[in-house]
Image 1 (spheres, rainbow, N blue to C red):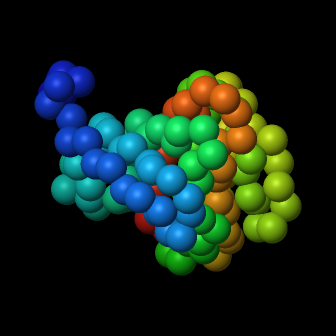
Image 2 (cartoon, rainbow, N blue to C red):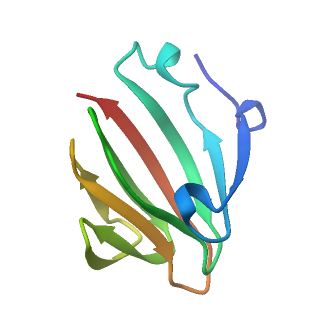
Image 3 (spheres, helix red, strand yellow):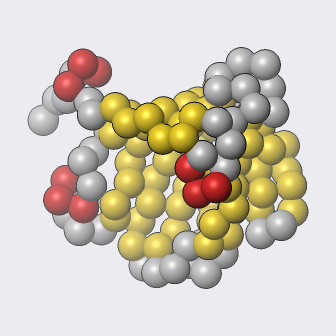
Length: 116
């Protein structure tokens, strides 16, 4: 299967998980049905400068971010870490995280959520 960029479902979410600003989500796979029931998210997402995803905890699933471009602040269970292009984050089952674009350019990242 090849999915062209103009065939991807795009979503715009304001104040995602009590964050600030707008999150743009481009679904690379459309949920569990395209992930053989092993996960629920595989997206190319963008946070504009100042926008964020609020801190949240993952139950029975884990999330990985691959930072594609830009820079931000990653909240890793309450510890703030700077992330930039090429960095990978991992939030395991029962752990929490959040992400804020602290730069001047859009922060683009790939998000993958897999079930435990």
